[in-house]
Length: 83
Image 1 (cartoon, rainbow, N blue to C red):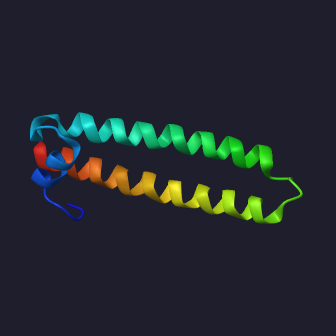
Image 2: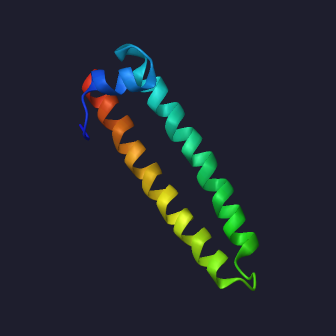
């Protein structure tokens, strides 16, 4: 399990341990939607004349992708520990 126990994750998300898989799956879906929106923004702004803005959006895209990966690991760990 990534850092934190199942109970800590359940408390953080305001659910019981039995509801944790569904809640973490919802978090993964939410961050995937955010990631798709950022990719669309990045695609739209890729050729903008402001290189600083372009770099900032690229950095945001990388960070959200990292968050998505970490949340997937949490969800997989939760499912593995509760099944």
